[in-house]
Length: 209
Image 1: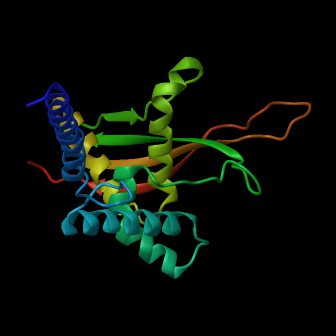
Image 2 (image 1 turned 180 degrees about the vertical axis):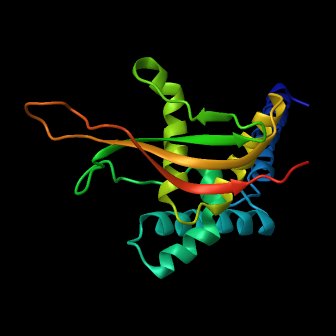
């Protein structure tokens, strides 16, 4: 065999080896791209169903909380209320135009006891930096007296206060939820606000143990 023939065979062997090496990554890439061509993740049917149900629940909740007052809205809010409370989708813009609130209000629970004493449990409130961590309690109290559908929330809060009073060694007999409010007066000469007043809005009779 001549030298030229040997060199030709060596070059052919090298070319075949290069061809095989270049083809292997292509096959590997083809195996890795068996999913959707658009690069989106592949979801199972139950996953797609769960995502669709979540989207529908969010849309219904937003519609229920932002729709004008009506019988349909009240029905939707009652149906979606647990989901709304868990996700925080309850949005109210009454503090802004066209009808901002004209009063400052808070909620307290007044407990009458078997020994004739009376205890009070106000929701946390304050001014300054403390508002950043206790303002949510004011909003919670606002929902108790403004929302006609908050029957379960009022009952739950009342039972919690009763349990706290019993834990302190008392025997509660009656609990009243009270809205403590004062008017915010118009700017100008004179005071900025009016006197405080109390408006009861829920009463619970406590059964003796």
